Length: 328
Image 1: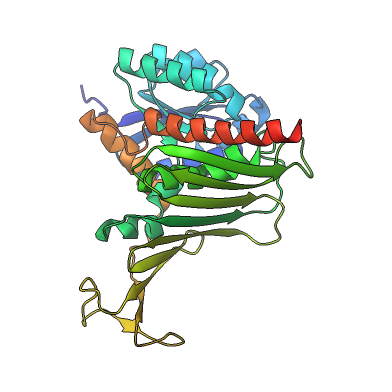
Image 2 (image 1 turned 90 degrees about the horizontal axis):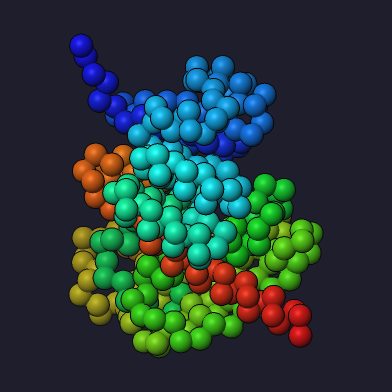
């Protein structure tokens, strides 16, 4: 008898994003898609037929034949789904944010430890090629500026722009600045939805570093940009177009003559510009590769449940500050 050694992954939630997850998982020869489930059974049947996948109506039936479950559903359902499948012995991949509350996230982390199962949270920007390009440099931020703008979509509007969009940048900021937070100032308003649609946040860290973040889902243009300032240089990251640029003091020894540099529009006596060449890998494929390898090797993924919890805690604290200021 020949045993199928592929990792069997079920997908719960086959809306727009869930379908993208299915497409990316089908790329991996190490993976067998064990089936799909959605509260909209007609939609599930349509997607099942398109990708030749078995459709389930009961979560436990899908969990029984799966090694892992990919959860691509509204945030308020993350905990109940993940709790059930973890108890049934499945690893879980959960789209961000990990859960709707800190209490729920802590509960899932304890369950994953108890049953020796992996939780990976879908903070995809940490697999963005522009962000990964920073790995070749020593990053010690003094100031980070983040702008994330998107047009309004009903999908995701059940949560604030902080949990929907800004949480990506919050995750990046706390991954780059190795210091506790000393102060948070935040402002935001709801315009179209019942939740905060635009927000600006200033975070001051105990080591003196500062991060300023703006997120909006009311923009005509899509923007996902960061600037990281540190001694003698700063980086600009265009996460949407996957570009990484460096502006550096000319006397620094870190940039060699062999680098492809030019000085157009800059003061050549002090500043060097470098367009950093990066590998244009697909971020979601890289994210799933990390999940697959973590299961195979029984190691922690890059964005574990704990990492997802840290980003959630900060996002919820910002929400609370804004909501309390509006109620004064």
